[in-house]
Structure formats: structure tokens, C-alpha cells
Length: 359
Image (cartoon, rainbow, N blue to C red):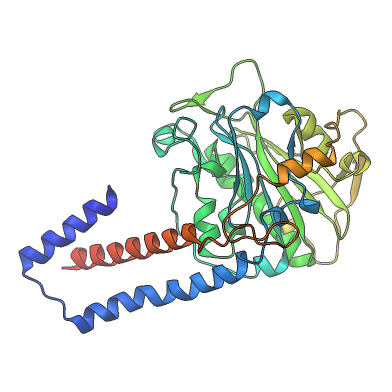
């Protein structure tokens, strides 16, 4: 609707002003928009076409929904740069998983907000932009925009399938600082990290916004750094208190009914390290200290190899290799092309609208 309105305004402007644009000027405008996107599209193809969906998981093992009740109306989605298990019941992700490396985070791009509804989710289970409007809650990224190395992954990160209703101060302050601290650990200490982020719904009565979108009582971010063995999870109440605690992965598993890192041992998931809560806490040559072992929480039950194999097969995408390196589909990256053309159109419209404003 916004695109159509902008286009109609531009047509009206051209007709009323009897404006003419020479073919040379028009070509310059189009090339000015097309060429940068073409270069980015080529970079994107070379980046993600060589990366399997399951590479975002530790040992290619997706977080597993141990509670059968959680599996109702779920949609596994392989995005560029992260994966999501979306719930049609809560209309939020149960988890969003990503793999961060120094190389990935060395690629910086300008933020372009593009919040959008996810058309890979059935319309009856899909959260909408209207659900969040006037709710008092932010559209909170689970896998953050700041972790994305290119335009395709950045665009995907703004899908509402990667969002939960988040208290403004929680989202804009404490959660932002935790995301920055996680990136700081990767870039300053030159080590990879596997991250699983998601909501926790607690209590007898769950608050909702819009048409039934669940509001989390807590948000969590579980991290595992294989190089140093550092592991733990951030636990932040979804309010404006700015509170955050570092807990074990097992505690998060007990609260969510999800096996966060299915191939890690229970002994490893019980360990708690002194995870940084801001970039100021991250030192290049200082590994976070071991704090304790959680002996009280009930870790999630083990997942069988057969269950993991079946779940892995659900995370596929056109023209992306499987976990074993075989190409899943030779579809000519249709979804990437559609997105590419959408972004070109929006950039052209934005350019023309700015022209009208200056006239």
C-alpha cells in the first residue's frame, strides 16, 4: 500500500509539473540504484549458497522441542544467517539460532529497518505489524540485526517470525548491551560462538497483544564458545527493570522444555561462566571465569540420533547445501531474486519521493 501510494504521488507530480526525464538521466538513476544491489546480490549468493542451513547449529543439531505440546502448529524456517522454530500458538519464535564468527562480524552494513510479516507462516498463525501497533511493546529481534553481514540476512532478521513483544527498556538497553557483549567476545577474543535466543512464557495467565501474540515473561540468550568451553545463558525479565542474571543452559531447558544444545553433555550444560553483560566487560586476553555448576535444574532429556536427523531435514532452503554438502535444490534462488527486486523498487520510490519533497 505504501509503495502504491508513493508511486501514485510520483505519477501525479510528473503529470502536474509536466516534468520530463531524459533517457540518459533516467539510466543514471536506475544504474545508481541497481549497481550497488547487483554487487551485494552477487556477494550474498556466494556467501549463503555455500552455507547449509544447519551450519547455524552446534554440530548441525537444531534445538529440540522436548515437550510434545510445544510442537503444535510449529514452522521451522531457514533464514539467511540464522534459523527459527516459529510457534503458531504463541505467534513468536520458540527459539532463534545463529553461528557467529570473527569473519562474519567483520562485515558491517548500514541498518535498514524493514519489519515485515512472514509469508512462509500460514496466515492463521502469523503475527502481523498491526498486532504490535500501539501495544506498548517493541518488536524485539531474537537474532539481532547487528549480527547480520549482508542485506539478505539483515532483511530476514526483520521478519516478525524472528520477533517477540519486548519491553522497551529491556529491548533498547539491557538486551542491546548483551548482544553487543556477545559480538565483543567474538571479535575481541577471536572465537566463534553458537547462540540460541528465545522467550520464556511463565505463569498461569499469559499476556497477549493484538490478535493473540504471547508476551514473554522472560527472554533468554544461551551461548556456547567451543574454543574455550565457556557456556551459560542470560536470563532477563521482560520488563523495564533492566535486570539480568547469568544461569546455566540446563535452567533454561527446564523452563522452556527445549533441548538447547542437543549434542552437548549434561555436565557441560550445567556449567556457568561469568558472561560479560556489556562490551566494557570483554577483555581481549581474559576468558570469562568459571563460576559454578548447576546441580538443581533438570536438564532436558536426551534427543535420539533419529529424532535429530528428522529435525535437521526440516531446515532446508532453495539452492542451499545440506549438512553433508549436497545441494538441496537448484531452484534459481527465486526467493533471493524477489527480495532483490523488491529492494530495488523501494529504493527507486524512496529516491523519487525525496525528489518531490525538494521541489
